[in-house]
Image 1 (cartoon, helix red, strand yellow):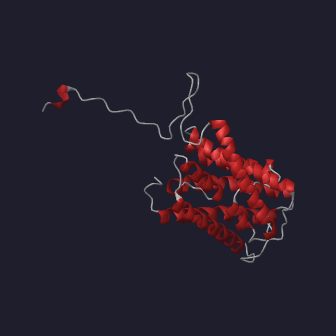
Image 2 (image 1 turned 45 degrees about the horizontal axis):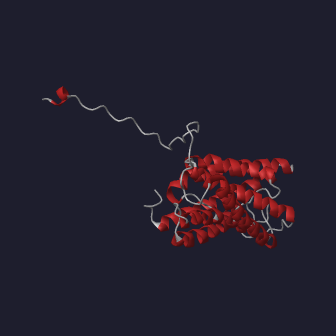
Image 3 (image 1 turned 90 degrees about the horizontal axis):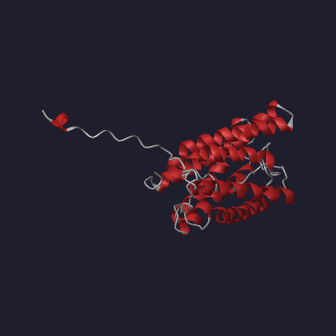
Length: 261
């Protein structure tokens, strides 16, 4: 469907989707910090809200723009397109990236305003340590591998559940709580709340995410072969991926007597 949707509408979907995602992340963080002083409970609430919100947004806007909501995903898809696969062209990348960043900033401002926080307040939450950057490399590499890997094995229709589930898990198994998204990282700098990140910490996080992008693409080639979207060779024992929408059975052919008046 993305091939027939005008570019303006696709960019708008990326703006709205990324903005809504950041509003979920920041808003749920503010709500969690208000309701509980336990950091573990706050993180649990924040991660669960992100899982449900992200899955819903991918399901809703995926048919419009592909539901990237993330410059890393857009650049990874562009890498696939340049090697003969399906993916965005240069004009789409040029439209998507600014839309994602602007949407992320707008989503943070919206969440702050909804909870009577200053609409723009630079975060004071320092996230500056090598182990956090390593966590971002791991989180981003896994996300890229998952998104492109699902397309390789014919299971891209499972992205709403799979991607949301991965991000929810990565909240807990990575030291950085899995930003894994340059646009979201920039947007969260505009909110001095539970989910914020200090502006001085943004650049190293984005750099780590770009390294994660390269690592994820490398793992994709190692695990699934060359860069093209070719399906791998299967043995008779390999399962065949189920189609996203199973075909309906064809109607029976009419008998001759049924055609007579």
